[in-house]
Length: 234
Image 1 (cartoon, rainbow, N blue to C red):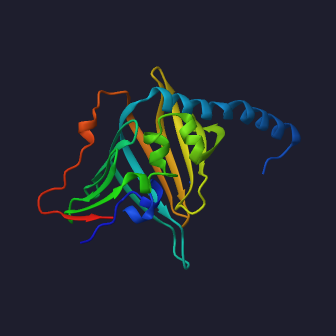
Image 2 (cartoon, rainbow, N blue to C red):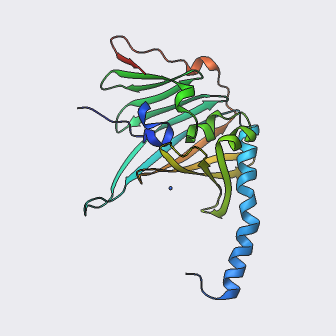
Image 3 (tube, rainbow, N blue to C red):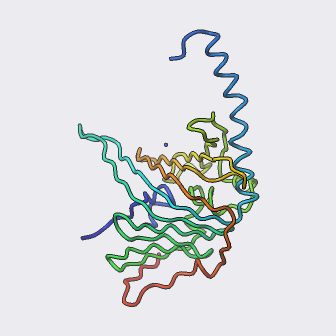
C-alpha cells in the first residue's frame, strides 16, 4: 500500500518535495490587552532564534482537509519526534501511523518512506524558503527571517505567545504559519505550529518534552539511503 507523508509537505516545504464584541468598553479593554500582549510573540521568536541553537521534542500532528463536494472535513493524526541544529539541519521522524522521515543535512533534503523503501532527495536551497522549517529550525537570526517573512505578533491565547509569519513570496504553497511559544526557565520553548496551505489544508503540530540546546552534532543529521532503496533525485 502506498503511503503519503503524514506531514503536509506543502506546509513544511514545497509540494514538489514530498491555520461579535459587544459594548464599547469591553472592546476597548480587549484591544488594549491585545496591544500589550502581542509584543511578546515577536520577542519570543527573536529569543528562540537567537538563543536556541538546537532543540529536540516529541510531536503530535493533526491535519485537517477542508470539506469538499458536500463531504465533511477529513482529519488525520500522526506522531513522532523532531530535532534541529542551526543552521539548516533538522529531522522529522514519524513513527505513527507509518514510519516516515524528513531529514535535512544542511545541503540536501531527504524524504524516506520506510514501507515503500523509497527515498526522494532535493537540494535544500530549492525547497526551504517560505516554509515552517525555515522559521523554526533553519534561520540563523531574526533578520534572515524578516527577509523572507512578514512577522506580525498575535494576542496571547492558550497560555502561549504567538507570531504570525506570512511568506513574502506569493507563488509558494504555504499561505501562513503561526507559531506558539511557551516561556520557561530556559527561555522560549516551541509549543505549537499551525500551518495553512493554499489548498485550505490546516496542520497543527503540538510539541511536548521540548529540550533547549541539547548536545547534537552535524553527524546526527546525515542520511544514507537504505540498501536497495529506490532513490529519486530531483
